[in-house]
Length: 357
Image 1 (cartoon, helix red, strand yellow):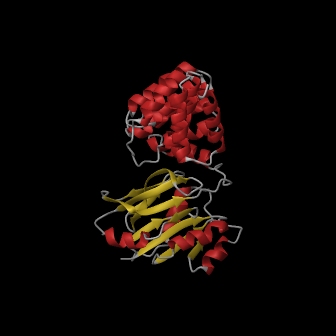
Image 2: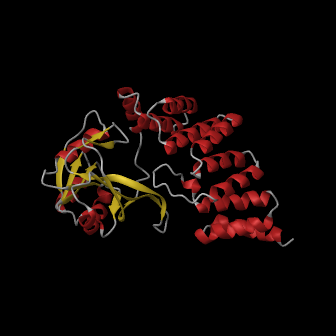
Image 3: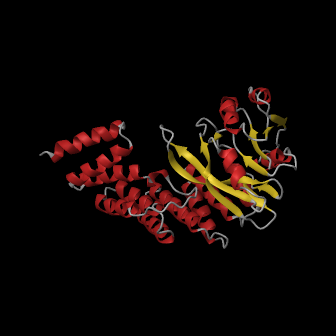
């Protein structure tokens, strides 16, 4: 069995060596460079990577990925799509060799989307960009996905892990026009509609975000509860920023009802009540969130649903609710997860000083 790694690249020379070192066990490595002006191409070629240069005009991610896919000879069995800001953890090649057969169309793996300063996962989900060589096409101008020509048969493993180290300086300016294009090309695509609404929210275009996210929720194909819950939460967030708190609360409640098995709805509402100094409700909501321990393995989950974040909020709300002993318990739990956090350390000293009185 032959396994390859492939990617698209533009001006990512600072990631090249780290990326290559994680992928070098592959039987072949292929990169489509879309117009780098730095030393990306030179570095990749020096390492033995097969590089093709082609500018995609007008730019869209699916076309670029399809061009990179064309570079791979047909005698490869399995393809790993790995962006330059991603890293395969050791053992990936051997594990894929052990578990994969051509009966499967795709392999789902652990994707650590966000990591803390100690390189421990903060947000993770199952990725799906490892696929059979034949029968796949990338679709959607941005937030592109793989479309399979056959009936999908997926294999899931915890033995293959990819870490994501995003470039904070990288612009996402192309995302909004590409998402607008995606929904224009296919107005019934629920995924693109959800992402467009989220993008409007990022741009603080609150009313556009609300309208678009409500369109997403009305689509017949919008059946994935996790994503529907996220749209509802984003609507709540928009109303909160418009200072329409009653409507924000209403949509947060809808999000909870839509996916009660997720922490996200409870914590979205908790942040609204916290900002409005309703600390009693915030405490109740945080405790309800903590009771949920199910890991869905999807990209939807927010960073603020982590135990650390919830313990932090609970310590503050219990403090304001004059439950000082509880506040101390929660701040200690937070510090156990983040012992060097200066703000948490300072908060603990304040709680201790009050608790002694």
